[in-house]
Amino acid sequence: MESTIALIGFGEAGSTFAEAAGWRSAALAFDVLPCRRAAMERAGVVACAAAEDALSDADIVLSLVTADSTLSAARDYAALIKPNVLWCDMNSVAPDTKRAAALAIEAAGGRYVDVAVLAPVNPARMNVPLLLAGKAAPSAEALLRALGFCNTRVVGTDIGRASAIKMIRSIMVKGVEALTAEMMLAATKAGVVDEVLSSLDASEKSQSWFARAEYNIERMTTHGLRRAAEMEESAKTLIGLGVEPVMTSGTVRRQRDMAGKKLPFDTNGCGDVIGVMTE
Image (cartoon, rainbow, N blue to C red):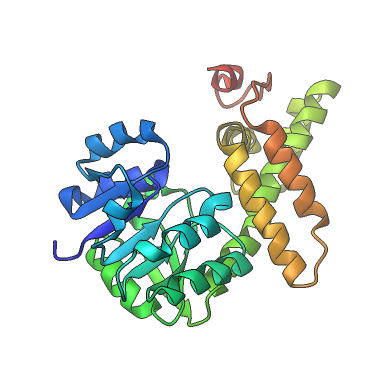
C-alpha cells in the first residue's frame, strides 16, 4: 500500500475499518485512551504513543474521535501534519464545527475534507455509505476507494454540506429512537405494550414494531451518550438554519437518559427483550 494512513481515534469505527481493510502496518493509530492499544495490536496497525508519531508522515488522516473532541483534535494536531495531507473528518458534528476545524487544518497547510458516515460501521464495514464535501473531496474519494471504502460520493465543494445532510437526517433517525423509548416507557407503565405495538403493526407493515422497538431501545442503551452528543450537533445545525430545535433538544435528553439503562420492556413477540436489556 503506497499511502500512509493515520487513524486519530481507535474506537469502534477505527478498529472496524482497520480490521476490515487489512491496512496493517500501513496505518498508524493514536488514541488518547491507552486501553485502545490492545485493539490496535489485534488489528495489526502501528500503535503510537503520541499523536505526532501517527501524523508526521501521513498522506491521509481519518479523524474518528468523539463529537465533542472534533474541533480540539483539529486545532491541537494541526501543527503536526505535513503539507497537503488529506484530513478526513469523519465525525458526526454540525457544519459550523466542521468549518471551524477546516480553518485550523488548512492554516497548517492540510486539505480538509468533510466526511459524513451515514450508517453504523457494523455490519457495513468498508461498504458504509460516505458522503464527502470540500475542495479536496474528489482527491479524498479516490484515495479512500484505494484504501478499500467502496460506497463513497462527493456531494459538493463546500465544507459542511456533507455534515448538514448527516445531521439533518439524524434528526429523524435518532428522534424516532427517542420517541420509541418514550412510547415504551408509557406503554409498559400502563400495561398496554402488546396493544400499542400491534396497533402500530396494523398501520405500517414494513417492519414489525416488536422488532423495531427492541432495536431502537438497544441502540440508545448501548450508544446513548454518543448519540446524545451527535444530536446536540444536530440542534446546533437547526439553530444555524434559524429553526428552533424543540424536538431535537428533547431527543438529546432522552438519548442521554437511556444510556446504560436496564429496562424491563417485554414485547412478547421477538424474543426475550428483558434478557437483551439486562445482559
